[in-house]
Image 1 (cartoon, helix red, strand yellow):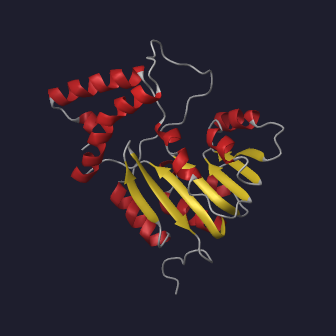
Image 2 (cartoon, rainbow, N blue to C red; image 1 turned 45 degrees about the horizontal axis):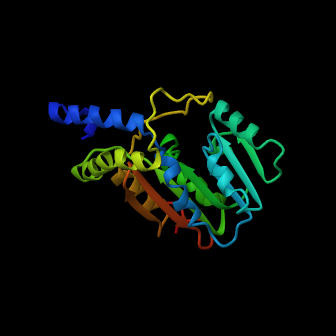
Length: 234
């Protein structure tokens, strides 16, 4: 059901036109949702963890809102870029580490376009274990397109994408932009929205999971007291 693989020649031609417009007016779908995260931070803001911190843009926005911010990235090159960015900043630390290696407690855990790189249920459980009571998990994620409902969200996103690009980046790009940094690790999502929804219901009762335009979903969960019970645990 992925619109990018539809064989209809009209659809394919329209897709090529959209790609050309998007390439000339690029914008970051991930950065677009940083505002959603910042509006949902909990009242207690001692420690925050950004999983898959990349070049550190979200870390820079969390800094100043928490006493301490930790960024981790499983990609050594990206972790190095982020660590260099905050070298000498006592409020921000960066580690080259996998999420499952992270210990401690946090008032907020953020993941932007990262959860589909991780084992889904295990990552959700580990996040719940790391959160303090009242702590909040905030996820911006990607899901595999499979059903007509999925496609119904992808189509308006595809059509609106160039309009947002024109607004955010009105000056057209004539040559590929190279910022000199390492390439972002890319992976297509394996789970559909329905599969993610089922995992979230089983692991994080009471979580708010929402489809969003621009090929993303959001997940918000607050730990009310202890971690959620394991399946099969009374």
